[in-house]
Picture (spheres, helix red, strand yellow):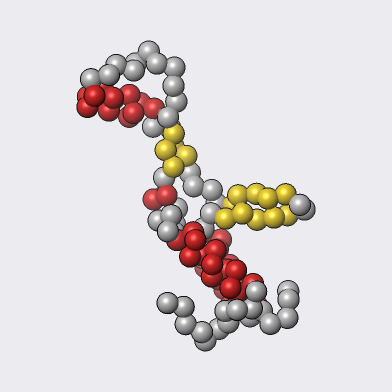
Length: 103
């Protein structure tokens, strides 16, 4: 690791937060999404809603509808991701160290 980085803080942050938040990790020149938001097939619910609410019959329609469910993530809301990225960047660049306060 680079000099000036609080390695203890970085390790703790990566264990307690970063490991649970969807993020990109680069290994061997390839970027990979870690902890991606789960996709759930909601086709039948979509067709039922179309029929009941909008009086559209999509039973014979050739379609698939998927929804992203942030609620299935341990960290919950999508708003957590930018905050986690900002804090992670501050730690790995040495701008944030143990004992400092983040508001």
